[in-house]
Length: 73
Image 1: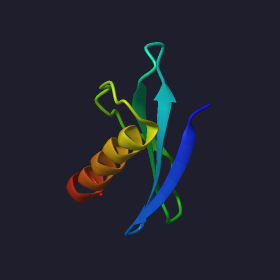
Image 2: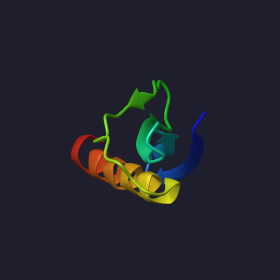
Image 3: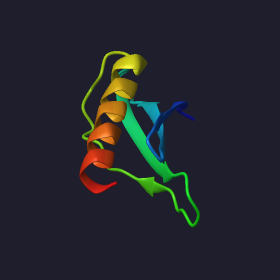
Image 4: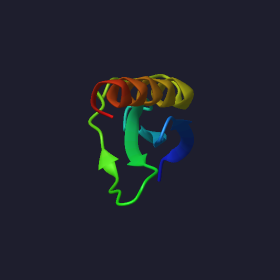
C-alpha cells in the first residue's frame, strides 16, 4: 500500500502517493476529491516515471494535481 500525503488546494483535496516498483524506484499516484457535495473521487493518470525516492514521486503527483485543478477544476 502506498504512503499517501493529503494536500488542499482551493475546494480540492489531493491524495498524492508513491507506489514502489520492482526496480526499487517509485511511481506517483494521484486521487483528487472536490470538497463539495456531491463529489466522486477522480483518479488522475500521472506519467509513470522512475523516481529514485518516494518524496520525488509524491512531488510529481502534487505538481500534476495543481495543474489538473488549474485546467479542469
